[in-house]
Length: 419
Image (cartoon, rainbow, N blue to C red; front, side, top):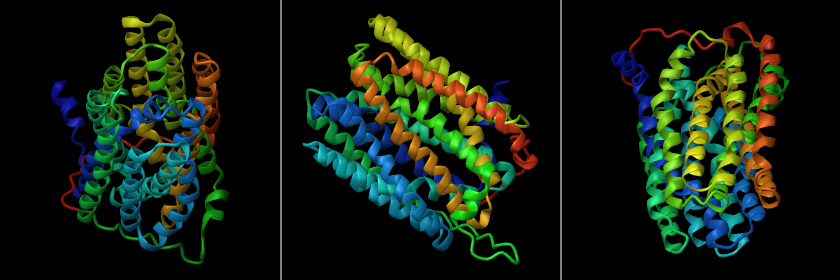
């Protein structure tokens, strides 16, 4: 059994995809150092109220909503490799700039710069993975991407929790500058990744563009559903740290450990879950995702009421349950988007998918911060209810999914060498 488990941790992927994901691992380490503590930094160190801090954090995603569609068109013209490189440098400036924040407008400025890069980062990276990986292996490639991202974020969060302290603003400066440096390192790894071949437009079809993407009703339904899941579920990980500190009495070090626990579960379970889900219906997996996330969210108010060791144990359970849901989501969402896309317009399709993430991460923290400011314990059951609604919607959408995209592909035992 152990040998079978270990085999799931090393799926056969092209060497170029592995290089891409190694760069992403280093970058995720930097994000883990800084991002879990951004809300705390803005509120507890720079004394910005929770509602405004939520809007600052949400600005990153909001600006990405504007930048993403533009970058999607550029990907289809010049390729995802170049757009990813520019995105990385923009985010280096934006995240490094958080160290200079003194007033709210500083936070909005640097969040906007980071958001411009963020808008191009995800469609560029996803287009490269989709273009460099055969269709039968994409669920493994995107699952590996999720492992690398979470491994880096978890190790970074654990390290950041040991460094960050609200009594020393300089400790946060270290985190933000280190995060900025990892974007630069990722751009170096990118030099070892080739540009995928272009998929030509079908004969007799000219032009193409976002109009074609928007007319794909099944695809648009899937990305809209993703928006709901992200906003109500995953995006609330950004509001959990400030709740954990101010309502449950968890110190920064404890918050770092919670994020590391979340990451550890994903790192250990993501690839085995991807293997288990091979051959299973994707929309039913998404329906299960909503139930899992709702369960985790409903536990959060118990931590606020209990305090002490009990609060830490409850939040540990919440972070673990959310991690299990992330494994389900990581296996299904990106490969489903890729299978529904016309690959001659892959940049635009991936940008539209990233748009749903951006809206979710813009609305989630912004609305969450407002609710936390007025009634901290009301946020979690409300978010859980939205997740359950999304589960029902996923089941209703299943019959519209084309046959070739309905199930996670079975594994094909093929080895790849090089790029």
